[in-house]
Amino acid sequence: MKRAAFGHIGFPILLLIPQLAIIAIFFYWPAGYAIQSSFYLEDPFGFGSTFVGLENYTRLTRSSNYMESAWFTLIFTSVVTFFALAIALLLAVKADKVIRGAKTYRTLLMWVYAIAPPVAGLIGVMLFDQSRGNLTQLFGMMGIEYRLGVNYWDTAIAMITVSIWKQIPVNFIFFLSGLQAIPRSVREAAMIDNPSGTRRFWDITFPLLAPTGFFLLIINITYSLFETFGIVDTIVKGEPGNNPMTLVYRVFVDGFRGQDLGGSSAQSVVLMILVLILTIVQFRFLERRIHYT
Image (tube, rainbow, N blue to C red; front, side, top):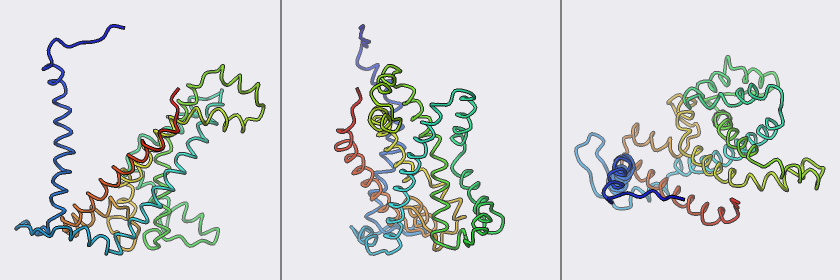
């Protein structure tokens, strides 16, 4: 194989400069500024700041609201990740077997991918609305009083349901591609060895989908932690009150509404450390169990 080579080392560096500049401006500079701000108590009107050391961090550990948001984020991320992956895998397995109308069936499952998170949240508000929501009326017929925006767990259910619904198409596309990449010869050999479809799936298909599943696990955890802001903001209607909040949404509420820039910066640093630990755990321990060949 012929290897590509550059005549001068300056040319590849020149090609990398735009990407490095974007990373520096939009990640490293804001991250550095957040770390610096987390050690200061900022004046809400911009008249100065006072160095307080680790006070912003210790204040987080004493805050019952912050700890409540942390627990809710853990539950929210676990439930959304599990059900978004499980439902998408089930749909992909069924879609892989469809012969007639396969393109139409797959398109119907994928179209939600094009919806922006705030729009998905708005659709969720319409479905779960207290007076006119279709799902609320269905719950009422079953004798269940559902109160979006008033009851803590009713609001949480709406957030989780919409977040799962929004993420299923992404997982579906990857799982379906992974299933169709399995060689036909492997499938035929598995059918000869084991007539049970369920056993074939767990013994042959699921292990071969492990690389795709591992990638999607990381993507879904990241999505649950950071990319559901629009859904949460739309469902709580900008009035969090006693409603559940994820840690990312609490950074926005405390920083931009509470004018606690030092505290929200400390929360941002905690999130960065959390993501760093999560990434290390995933790649150091989980990836060892994944075989790509």
